[in-house]
Image 1 (spheres, rainbow, N blue to C red):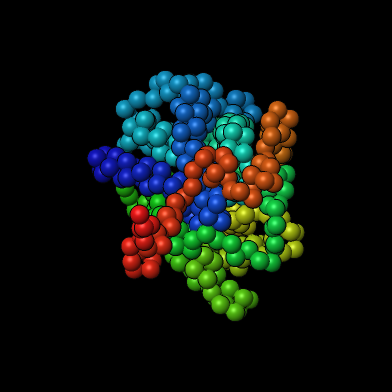
Image 2 (cartoon, rainbow, N blue to C red; image 1 turned 135 degrees about the horizontal axis):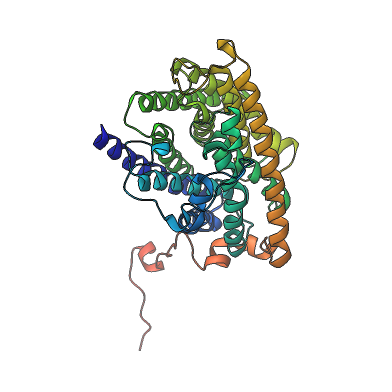
Length: 427
C-alpha cells in the first residue's frame, strides 16, 4: 500500500492547491468587474508568499517538538532541514516526510486566501502582503500547532479537528469579520441590495473547483489510501449536497426564488462544517451536519449584512467562521470511535468529554484570532495606509492597484456596424 498511499497524497496535494485558485474564482465572481483581478490576485499571492514562509520557518514552528505549554513548535525543521524522503512515523508512516510537509503547506496557503473575500475592493495590495505574512506567522502557525503539532495543548486536551475546522476555517472566518469591521464598509454599501456580482458563472466555476478540491482537503487528511479516506470523501460529499439543497429551499422561502450564487455558498458552508468531523462521523451524521450548518450559516449571512450592517463582502465570516464553529461543535456531538478508533465518542454516544474539549478549543481559537488579527491590522495601519482612497475604490482596484483590467472590450468600427465601408473624402 505504500505506493498507493504516496500516489493518493500527491493527488491530494494537487487538489488542495487547486482550491486556492478556486477561492479566487469564487470570490472574483462576487465583486464588480472593476475589481475582479485585484480580488483574485490577493488569493493567488498567498501561494507565493505563504509558501515561502512555510519553507523558511512555518512548517518547523507547527510540527517541531512543542514548548512546555504546547503553544508553539521549535526549529527542528527550519529551512526544511531534516525533511526528507523517509517517512516520519508521527506524520504518516507510509509517505515521505517531504510529501506530508507539502500537503500541510497547501493548507497554510489557502487559509489567509479565504480572508480576502471580506476585504475585497478596499484593501491596498502592499498592505495585504504584509498583513498576510504577519497573520500566517502569528495566527495560523500557533493555532495549527495547538491542534496538530506534537504536544499541542488542544491535541493533549483531547480536542478533535480532522481537516481544519479550527485551524483553517475558524481562524480565517473570525479574522475576516475583524478585517471587515476595521476597514469599514465599501463606499455605497447597501446591506439590503448585494446583487452586485460580476459573474455568477465565475462563482459557480469557483465553487465547483472548491468542491472538487475539498476531497483532497478532507480525504487526504487520512494520510493514506485507505477506508478512512473513503469515509471522509463520502461525508464530505453528502454534507455539501445536503447543505446546498437546504440553502436553496431557504432562499426560495425567504427570497421568493433560489439563486445559483446562493446554492454555491450553501455548498461551501456544508463543506466547511463537515471538515473537522469528516473522518470521525458517519455518513448519516454528515447529512445532519450539512442541514444544520445550512440553516445557521444562511441566517448568519443575513444578520451580518442586514442587521449588523457589516460589509463582509462575500460572507466569509458567516460561512467559514460560523460554519467552522458549528462543525467543530457538531463533531463533538456525532463523532464515533466505531468510525475512527483514533477519535472519540461524541455526545450522542454517551460522552460529553469531546464536546467540552472542542467547545474550549473553539472559544480559545476565536478569541486568539480576534485579538491578534485586530493587533495586526492596527500595527500595519500605523506604518502604511491599509485602505485605498475613495477615488481608487470608485475607479476599481484592478486599474489603481495593478494597472490591469479583467476584459478589454474593443468598440466595433461604425462602418462594420452599418454594414458598409468608410466614406472617403473627395479630392
